[in-house]
Length: 56
Image (cartoon, rainbow, N blue to C red):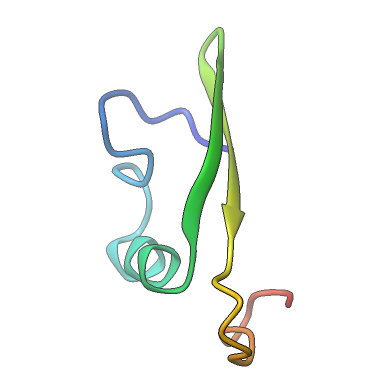
């Protein structure tokens, strides 16, 4: 979930966290509501282990 405006849903995040999410996941779906966006992030089915600190 994010409140970021504009084309980059990760723009209001800590740069290191945003980079991790961009590297490890792709946005499968994005729904916009008043003042908030809900993103469905999916990990590629490559069989890689979950990133440190994120549930797998």
